[in-house]
Image 1 (cartoon, rainbow, N blue to C red):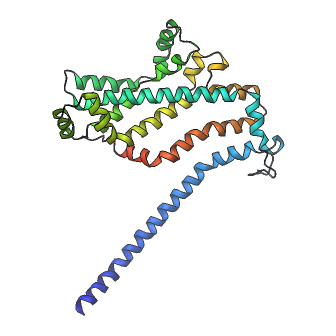
Image 2: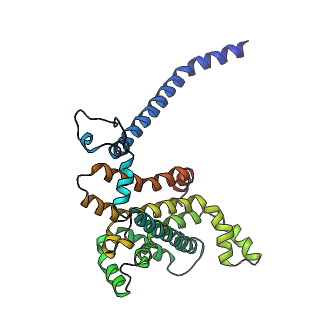
Image 3: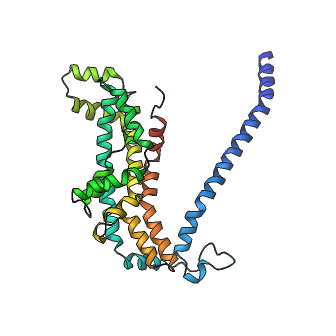
Length: 291
């Protein structure tokens, strides 16, 4: 009986603290929901504008949703420009850059994390140092090299210069460094080659980091504007951002159609993130910045 009374007294003393924690937790969730709502307002406005007739876009008071949504704005915008070709080019370039970047970054990260060779740390620091170089510094020499190789208005000119970067090497190296060396030694004792060790032992442990890197690279390539603008002068090779820029220039007053194509261009990235968001978060959390 005494034990039971003591338990009740402790519960009574703890209840105010629990109530405070519950209130703080509820307030935190409420702030997160409000923040998410504020961030979604531009997207909602984009969709709303894409479905409005022109006379409702700037009407006052603000009309948040059109009285009669005009879905034909999407079809009209799609048919005005060769957006099918733009999307095909963006998919080809983004897919190729993502695959090559993930492979090269994985190989480099594996070597820097698990091999011992002279100058390894200096090489890693030199790779990281390239992150501090602004794109304007690299743009002119890269363009001159691509021009000498006759890669202007070609897929290889769009793909190869973006096929590797320091961030991918850093991300993969920081993840691979936490793979137990005992697994690699056991595989070597069994006679496995280094390539087989990477693809059959190391790579299956890296899927969150691989998907994280793939999402980052895909987003950067899909949204790339300056480089495709520099080396492409033909519609057959232009990507979605360049197509949107040209479309907005030639349809200055058709804000609804510009918003329609902007929303369509955003959809692939949003879909990919929602599908792989769990692996993306795991990859960010497991990069192992501390050693």
